[in-house]
Image (cartoon, rainbow, N blue to C red; front, side, top):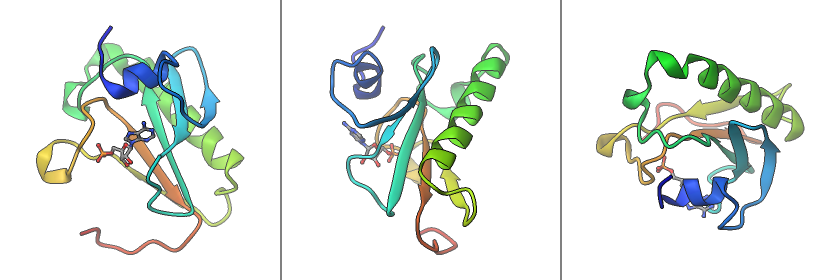
Length: 114
Ligand code: AMP
């Protein structure tokens, strides 16, 4: 158990607009959306960065991807598509040290990112 902000959201100690929940994964709306749809999908387990994942997290990662699919369906992103982003570490601008997937959609997104 940690005091990180996403652990606290997962424990429902901090409010969030939840889109989808399973026993191991939570999807909720980003508080500063960068697109018409901006959902964060997190494992409830505290994993600081993508590079901290290990083989024992394989099933959890599959769960995360299933929740990404379900959140995308629920938010109406299936036909037009969406982007899935993981910021890993300082050069990527990771601000919250709890692994999270950004689901961004609802408009055409530029590439490459800044
Ligand atoms: P990153 O820069 O990849 O670490 O992204 C962290 C994301 O968390 C940012 O897009 C923030 O807007 C978002 N965020 C921070 N605090 C909250 C919160 N309490 N509820 C929802 N989203 C949050």
